Length: 256
Image 1 (cartoon, rainbow, N blue to C red):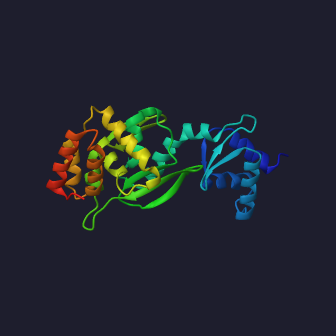
Image 2: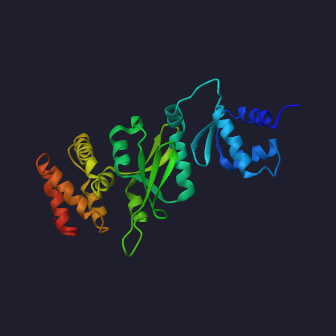
Image 3: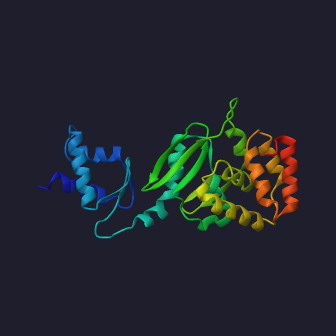
């Protein structure tokens, strides 16, 4: 008679390369062993499956079913699964959201060849937290709101829909919004890189930005500081653009 563990392995091997939740794994263990299997036993079985390379741990609640005779790297799994896992996780957390800040700007610069970021910022109205997507790759959920209202319904109008490898219909901040988000409260260790990306984006887009879009954003009483930083950043290289930005600041905000 086959051992329960071998029955479990046979069941899993019929689903190679699929993603398995921890809850579904428990169900398979219950079927192979018995329904009253204690949680300590489940942990031991899970560890045994991982140790024998039938499962690869993606994060605390997800596994990748693999074949121990055919090795697969973390990078391969990320390339195949990251974007889909990102979208599915976002669907579970919030209905209204978009990719913002540096990840959005890099998408505008590199489009489909953009590398998977260590952290991707997701602007939404429900959650403020940092969570894991797969391995070490994380989501920074960020709520954009004022004291009086949540801004997501307005900011989401400043997004575009794109298709990425293995994932379609992702909402991404447009170029102007992604630039302003990058300039808002950024980490000084990334200052040089962010500024170079912005300069490259402006040059790539005909040395101009959509001033109407910038106006729509600052009218929400958001990103005055970012627009001031953009004004200073473009002063020397793009003086005409810089002057137009200054006019917007004076009209809807204040010069810092």
